[in-house]
Length: 141
Length: 190
Image (cartoon, rainbow over all chains, first blue to last red; front, side):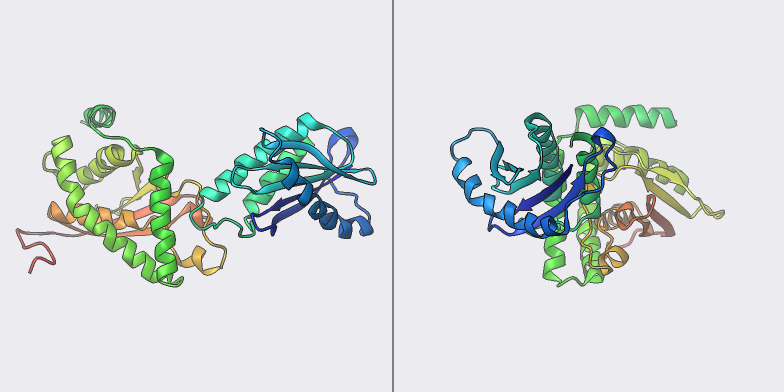
């Protein structure tokens, strides 16, 4: 199983993306998207932004569960209070662990925002952030 | 004597110091540095200088508050001074106690190792190559030490030699005693 995570800024600009594989069921943590899917991932995820913007006002929680589906791929969303969208493309439904994953990514994102040299909507280039997100992927996905 | 210093500075920290939220403090300092970096258009040498200057102005005032709060007497030697700076000064104002080490044999130069740096929480330096080589993010501390010690007749030279923010394995400040000042007019008074 493979996962594709994108963080989307307030002007619908991508600020971070990562592909992750699962470590569950003997997985080795390497994403196994086909070459075709690799190119499609950002499109599918970005297509879901409209739906997220619809759903986010109808829900009280930050975590919006699976908002969209595309030929067997689900897109789950999380919107921070500052309107940064976390979108995760995944193959099986697993609301609870994805919720925990998003919550922890949100903690990391908050720490990034607290860095005085980081401006909102800038791409996140920190290697530490990248590493920690991947550790969270290993823990929850 | 050391135990006495530690106990009383713990007590002062607990009872006589007004506290401020840690994130507020860190972010305030962070936005000052970030703004300086923008104002000087990423000229990190100038940012370092400016931070030191700001620190100096803090230090020459802060030392009065420090003496009033702690009632510290005159130090017998520069070694005493080092202990007081670490165990009382840093403790009372930042609630950390840097280690005092690496004395030179003439007893005029030592290092302060900051295991924790409340100024630099959450911070990652900009990744433009130069920042990690040139910017001393917490350089305000060098100014504070210089200013404060100058007001008690110690002319010192203070520099950062390493910083965990740059990827070093510890944050180290080097203090060198230049001379004891006789009763002179403070710099900048004329």
